[in-house]
Image (cartoon, rainbow, N blue to C red; front, top):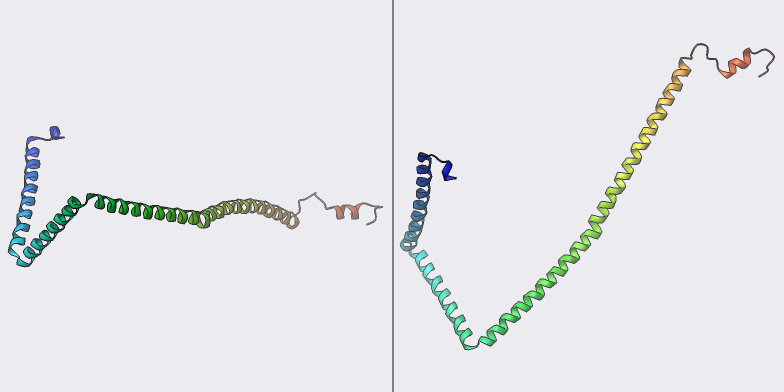
Length: 164
């Protein structure tokens, strides 16, 4: 990517990089000075460091004195931890199965039924619309009969010799 940069741009990038390095060094030096200047912080850092050293030295002594016991303790901790993790995994699987059976599957079933219901409603709506159109046509024929199209009753009345 530096190949695409012009000479002045490379200088800015290098300057920016140097500036970041200088800021990091300044922050570290400032932090170290703050620790050295503040007596409480210095005492706390010193005591924590000594405690860590003592704990490490004690652990090393125990390992040197009785490595088999330390090994057995570590193996027991690993076994106990493995059993706990296995139990947690079984519980998590059981919870997953329970949620799947009681929530997800019924929700999917409800979704399928809702889709079927919606389809049935759409079909019924289309059929109702067709019926409405037929009723409208029939109403228009009653309200505005077609000229020359006589009803069956009128035909019987006008035909001589036929009794109703």
